Image 1: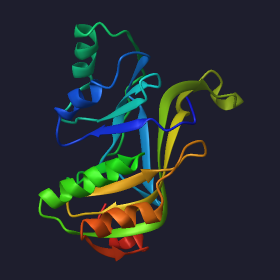
Image 2: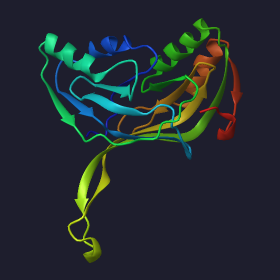
Image 3: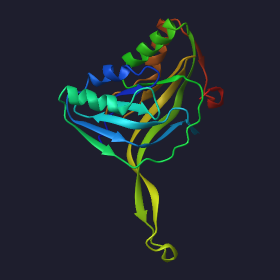
Image 4: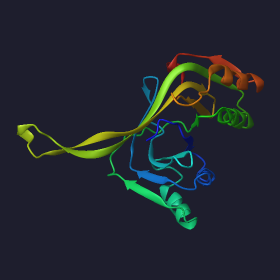
Length: 222
């Protein structure tokens, strides 16, 4: 996997968004199924929004994440690629149990580019939300792993097998904006331009958002 952050689409409450995202993909497609997702904001594990299917296209600069048991299904993407004669590779790992705690239905917006932050803010305003909390310093990550079987070398369990997780790729973030309807996280990369505090504050101020600067994660509701 590349160190470059791709354009991220997280399909959550609006399943038809998958088709908007798929229109960006023209080649170089890998579909990963049954991934293990670890999503942390600060030191808090987010368990209400687990993604276990990923459509990865470095050539088309697009990454699409689908929720386990979500409203959009990976079969929709496969059908789309078949109908549009786009070649794709499927990597289907073994299913595993992942603990998912049902909670609030807020969306997560992952912003690599500043226009995504602006789109997210305008979307919240349209829904009547004009205030937010903002922690500019908190670091977060989504780590994707896949399950494998490994042999144990311990003589007491010779030839026994157990399930382990191997690292696939990681997305890192800095900063967290919380509106009533969504969270916005900005990606960080060593090889690309990143969104800074001043960029986000400029958008919030231009849209006359009432901003509470809050660096206590206990005050957030995920």
